[in-house]
Amino acid sequence: MTKSVPVKELMERLNLEVLCSDNGLDRPIVTSDLSRPGLELTGFFSYYPEDRVQLFGMTEISFSKGMEPQERLKRYRQMCTRRTPAFVISRSLEAPDELLQAAKEAGIPVLRSRLKTTRLSVYITNYLESKLAPVISKHGVLVDIYGLGVLITGNSGVGKSETALELVKRGHRLVADDNVEIRKEDELSLIGSSPEIIEHLLEIRGLGIINVMTLFGAGAVRSSKKITLVVHLENWDPEKHYDRVGLDEEKTQIFDMDVPMITVPVRPGRNLSVIIEVAAMNFRLKNMGYNAAERFTSDLNHLISHNSMND
Image (cartoon, rainbow, N blue to C red):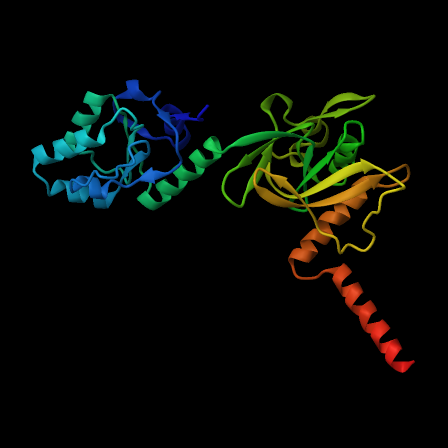
């Protein structure tokens, strides 16, 4: 099923003024792309993105003023199709009478904003991308650690929520527990958030459900966070080889994106919250250009080479 956003929701979000056809505010917006209908005003309709919000700025309005009224009306009527969600005018510009007439005939709302065209375009696009982005749900806990969105995964009962609670006590922020909704807002961003019904809640076995914001304050939670690192918790397997140096680089795929992953074995006596906290700090350090594992390997190889030459 194709996701959509009603025009009314966009109007309320950006505080847009309705100029006509308020009965068309339920029309669906199905794409975050916008159209600046300059070529259409000249009569070029070979490619007309009719399913996009049609944005009019100073250029479009000024150009249309130089047209004959009947020509203007003809062009605007051609722009009004059953798939056109809305017309939006920026900079509090006056809407041409012919546009209002054509929009009323088709039941398409005409909205207006005081914002400049470029800024309004950015706001509309960002909002629609957020609302229309594909979403998947993933079992895990998402925590903001030193500004990094760390998704903690693992089998049920491995200790994800308890680890998240300890991280919150250490000053980090909870985003979601148990069920993380992940939106792919663009080709580079995975944004995680919590379903509304369990937002700010943390389930601790033996204790029950707690409200993190109520217990620790508003600074202990946040509504969403870009996922940068995945930490997978698994029960310690003595037969399995675990990375002890840090040269192995694991990745996991979410949607079609590869996300860096660290596997942390769990057994009694290991302080998982501290390990994950340090993993986040070390990941940031790697992104800044310093890799302790590579530095150690380089120094070790240099020492071995030096000693072999002296033998």
